[in-house]
Every structure is written in C-alpha cells, then in structure tokens.
Length: 420
Image (tube, rainbow, N blue to C red):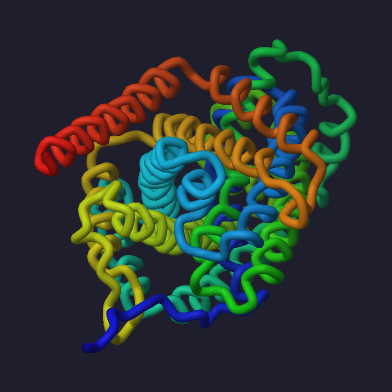
C-alpha cells in the first residue's frame, strides 16, 4: 500500500530567513505607522521599542520550542505537546483568525498602492487568487518569489530613507520630536498595533517540516529575521516621523510615499509605491503558506475537518487548506477595512504568543535555550498589549476565539456520544 504524501524538507537557512523577512517587512512597514502615530504621536518610537522587546521574548520562546518540535503547526503543535490539547487548539485558532485578518490587510495595502482609484478591492482579490496559485505550485516557488520581493522592498525603503535625510526638515524634525507627548495607554496601544509587524517569524516555525536541519536552522532563522526587521523598522520610523511629523504621519494614507514627496523627491514616489506593492505581496505570499501549515496540523488532529489534511502528491503542499484559506481571505477583502484588520490580527497573534511563552516556560533540561524570565516577560507583555488594543479589536477577537472554543466543545461532545 502506498504511503500518503508528506511535506518535503526543501528550505535552507537563507530561504527561511527570507520568508520571515518577507512577512515582517511587508506586514507593517507600509501599513502600521499611521494607526500607531494616531494612538501615540511620536511616542510610537517608544511603542516600537516595546513591541520589538515583546517580539524578541516571543521569538526566543518560538525558537526554543521549534528546536524541540520540528513539525508543522507552530505553537498549535507546541501547545499540544507541552501543555495540552486545549491550549494548542486556542493557539492554532487564534493564529488562523489573526493571520486571515493579516492576509486581508496585506491584500488591501497592495491594492491601495497598485490599483487605479475605484479598482482597489477587485485588484486585491486578484492578488489573493494569484498568490494562492503560486503557493499551490510548491514551497520552493514560494521561497524564490519571496527573495525577489524582499530585495525590491529593501531597495524602495532605502530610497525613502535617503529622501527623508536629504532634506533640512528631516534633520530639524528629529530634534523636535517629543517621545512622551502621548499617554501611557496610547504608547502601549501603538506597541500592540506595531506588534502586527513583527509576527512574521511565526511563518518560519509553522513550516518546520519543510526546513532542512530544523533543530539548528529554525531558531537561527527566527532570530536573524527578527533582528533585521527591527533595524529596518526603527530606521524607517525615525525617518518618517522626522520628515512628516507625528500629526501628518497619523493622517497619511501612504506615509512612506508622502515622506519621499515632502523631501522633494517626487520622482521617487512611484518607486516607493512599487516597493509597497511588492512588500504587501511578499507578506501575503508567506502568510498564505503559514496559515496553510497550521490548518494542516489542526486537521491532522481533527481540530479542523480532516478533509483539510490532504497533501498534494506532486507539489507536496496542503492544497485543500490553501484553497479554502484563499476563499476566506477573498471574502474578508470584500468586507473589511485596513485599520480594523490590523487590530484584529494583533489580538489573535498576541494570544497565540502568550501560549507560546507558556509552553516554552514548561520545557526543562536540555530543551531549554533561554532563561524563563524571558518567557514570563513575553507572556505578560502579550497580555498587556492585547488588552490595550482598540476596543473593537479586543471584543471582536475575543468573540471569535470564544466561537472556536464552543465549536470544539460541541464537536467533542458529539464524538463522545457516537462512541457510546
């Protein structure tokens, strides 16, 4: 009897780093600064530091867990193994709903930069469909396209930074920034919104069955991708704030393009817009792949329909899961707005990483790579940032997680009755 197809280990360290970078740089650098500035003004730089520190704690937990559990599913698999099935289910469900919102946010961001006026949603839907097809053709295609997109994005960001610091207003604006004008609550809210940008390293962990030498390469890739992304975000955030100022950043539809224009580099705006479109596509590509692997892992354990656990015999990808994900994202793109999607996504991801920290805290002996204090700080940080997000995001996210819990309770009860 022929054994069912499995995922193939085709990704090296560089591939994994680029997939994480593609997710993080595209996930927020063109989308998250405006809502963060609206919450905290120039204090978003303090929020960025807080978000980066919480992300580091979470990355340490994820790296430690991934080395011990090199399988698909990320914290869903880690939570099940280290704490119990219910913890794993909540983590997996929070990841899926959070990342589906992220997919919608990235598709909408792409269309905002690339589509002619009035055509934003049709273009966003077409982008989701096209990248779903790329993912269906195999993980090496995903990694190759992600490398190209990340290089394009970094070049566009270099243009933004050069434009900002070529002008006198940029230099003077930096000296005039007051990082503490916002309230403490506003700064924490900006940190929660900016956390949306740093969650891309989760895609590396969720693809644990496709990375070569995962015990070594996944932890290294997570830390490398996060460190590089944090440097990029810090440089770009300072440039945008120094050039536009906090108020203009908060009201900007496309803050990076407006930074180039304010610096007198009007010719650079098309380059920045092209880079933004590429960044959004790179993030969306990696997001679809990551959600597909978590869905596969949950379906294998019957926490989602077993139908979604299928792997394509030729392309070795969870094709049914990725098709369903593309359909759900297309529906979301047609119905949600960008800022709401970012808040909802952040809430789901903060719950996901809270459980990752709890699971890593339980590990003992040779499995431990980082001190437990990092997992305590990471868990507390996730809880605080989740509760300081916009109220609609907290209520909506909690409601959807509750729906998932009730649904699993119903399914388990039905299975129990059938077994009697």
